[in-house]
Image (tube, rainbow, N blue to C red; front, side, top):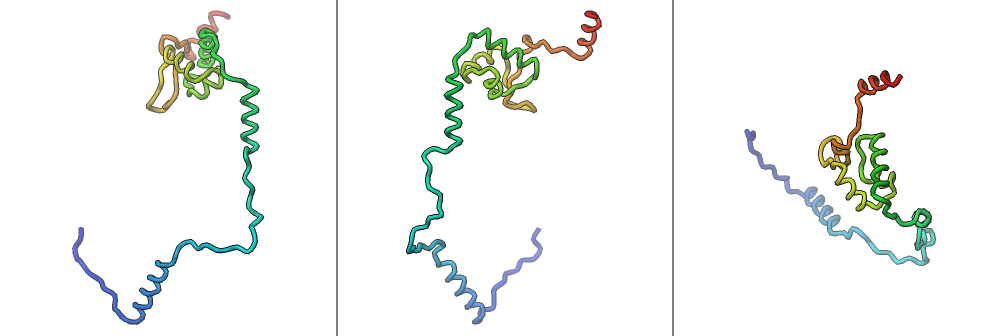
Length: 148
């Protein structure tokens, strides 16, 4: 809340005018200046057509070859075995595990999983309830007791 209003003006004297003149000169100076060099600068890095890390990446890609669609049942088995270890996976991890193309994997995951777009497990896939076979710790203990 404003209680008092005040307007301030500087005292216009020689000192103030010098200060303003210096400010004006500084502001009109170009920020970048071009210079003519007498000899070429040799300390700059030369451009490289293809860097080492790009070459390594290309070699790795060639050795792995193109991703080929495996049989649907084989991919489903790989997905189910992965989901036995963890409940949530992002698509990148599933691609690494199954070695399948992203579009094909997403197509399969739409059938067997649900995509979490919100919450704590954002951007991850989990199995639909009808495909889950998780057991609680108590059920596992009972099962072990029965088999023993």
